[in-house]
Amino acid sequence: MLATRNRLRTSTDFSTTVRSGVRNGRRNVVLYTVAIAADEPSRIGFIVSKSVGNAVVRNLVKRRLREAGALSLQQYGTGFAIVVRALPAAAAASWDQLLADYNAALETTMKRLGGRLPRAASVVSRETRQEGTPRA
Image (cartoon, rainbow, N blue to C red; front, top):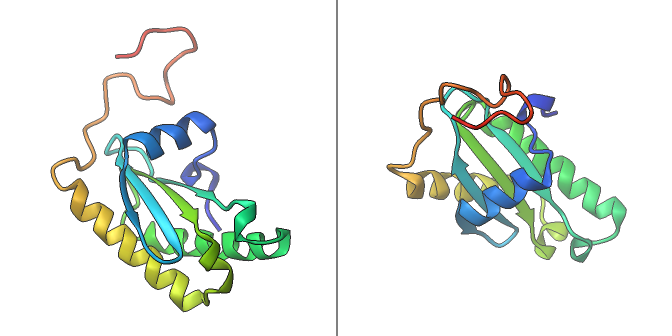
């Protein structure tokens, strides 16, 4: 299970990652990855639409992808935001197929990031920034 600090939770985080991230698709998943501050924990979010299946199937796919994400945090524990979008084929995929697609897409996006690896944290981090204060 993913810790709260490792989850993408707001629509702003999702849209920023999807719009500005590096994308790679496989048969069952599409991954979007973007580098964030190097000292921030990596965060992962999941998009599993109704096209994947009914609620039972969507939750099964989501649980499997969440576990794959938790395993990937061992290698990429800090500095990345990742959005995983499940495709309809994920409903019929086994755990091994989902894990293989997730890992292959993640490795490809990390290679494509290349020079855009996690940047150093700004003077004012997101956690310490007060509401209404200008960003550093």
